[in-house]
Length: 429
Image (cartoon, rainbow, N blue to C red; front, top):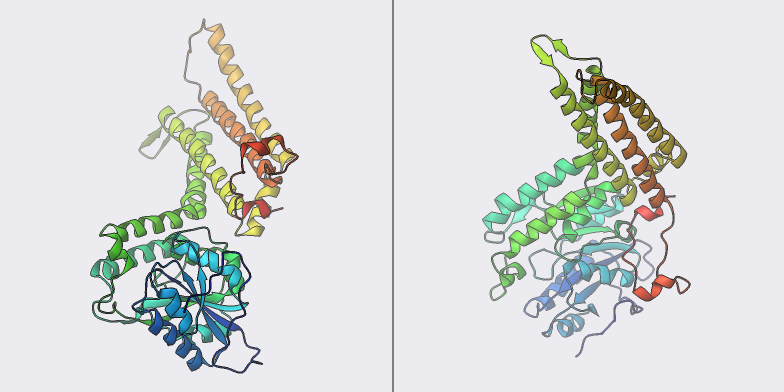
């Protein structure tokens, strides 16, 4: 028996109902699982999924996203699963390919290797019924069969990366790498996943936090590989887990301008302004500590770096567009007229302060008779004013609709397709 071949983007076949009456008006449950050469276990896995649907008394189906070269798709279809054949392009891409074929309702994800117990779907479905939009499984608070999780993953990799993500995004997850998770289809679409590989797991978790989804986690059972089966990490070599950890960290950092830029920039800018303004009339002594030109130059550096970081944080917030209210406020604060006038004012004041310095320099036959602290203040204002104007122009560019190079009316269309449109920022009015 051959598997149903559904090209990516093609209409899905009508899903099969399981475990409940046809008139059940509760959300439909779709179990979406990628498969790559799992012929040894895929049949039993599909049976587990059907049993899980029966136990929780819900209508649903098993959708296998298959890139296998063995008999996996035929076995899965013979056991009652719907099979979507896709090219081998990465784990995250397999989920992206499946989204157009998922029926509205709940989505439960996981692996097809019998390590996650899909007979126990009820905790995920119950949590979604209770109003949660994203439900993570947690192995750390559940049961881990001896030998199922390498010590490096269990005691180092997973706890460390989970701790990092929780610190950055203010979440309280206990196991961000658990592959078994449930969500509403609407929540999955709102995430607009971009990752094609292992980092989809972290991207999904952090976007749930950034989008303000109602989240929770439920304990699960995690089993070791069946005899004769080797995990994909082991198939890929000893370096594979380290690569997976690295690209997951990359996903965490890329979406974290608030953590890495915004708060540090405010601290640097506040300290820098205090030093520059406090020393603009000359050296000062506070207790036994003397503050002079070197401190003022340090403050100027902090102002420049902090103000640049603040601009990048605002631009990142607008670009990603997770917090629409904050993005609109940023665009309103740095509206073109306001931003350009503010920047020009800073530059004008800075030029005037330094005009006095230039005059003294000229009168003294091109020599400085004394250190000009007000001149350093003027240079600081010139730099900040220039940054303000440039930042305003960039935000104005982001605000405007992107020019479509694929439009036949555009002469540049012959040069080739345009780069990918940013997933969120362009939607902020």
